[in-house]
Structures are given as C-alpha cells and as structure tokens.
Image 1: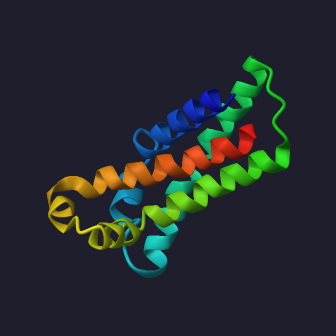
Image 2: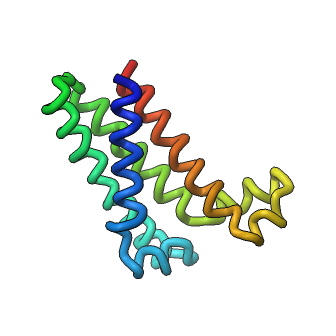
Length: 129
C-alpha cells in the first residue's frame, strides 16, 4: 500500500506544482510578508489534488483510509509545501550544507523538489502504517 500511496501523492504533487500552479503563485510565493505567505498558501491549497487521488485510490484499490489520518496527511503536505516554497528554507539548507555555488547554478530547484518528496514520503508512511 505504501508504494501506491507514495506514487499517487507524488503524482498529485507534480500536478499541483506544474500544471495547476499559476504564474501569480510562482512569482509571489517567496516574497516577504503577507503577500508571499498568501501566494504560498494559495499554491499549497492546489495540493488538494492529492486528496482527490487518495479518494480515487481508495475507490479503485479498495483501501480503507481513516478520514482523520488522511486529512492530517493532506494538512501536512499543504503546510510543508507552503513552508518549503518560501524559498528561504531551501537556501538556508544549502548554505548550511556548503552548496552556495550549486544554489547559484540552479541547484535550489532540485533541493526544493527533494524536500517536497521527503514530506510526501512521510505522509505515505504514516498513512500506510
């Protein structure tokens, strides 16, 4: 069940991060203050597609996902996504890991996606436990 959950959550993440993310969200989610947080939260809300895929998976594959843990997993995905997408956490990590040169040459996008996938794996592990 873990692999199915992880795959569906990853697919939901890709859908929310690319075809469902608006230009406004992408341009403003890392801005300081209220404007940035609102854009980040708005973008994180598009990850409701992960919930749609969980419902679909439950219907097609016969899962019996408890509602409260599933809602907690979706909240976790949205909250971690909004936090990671503020960009400063990724850049702070890359400074700590002595990756400033890689960050300056496009590496931050890879670290960003890795952090998102790590959060999805945590959600999938908790739901499959």
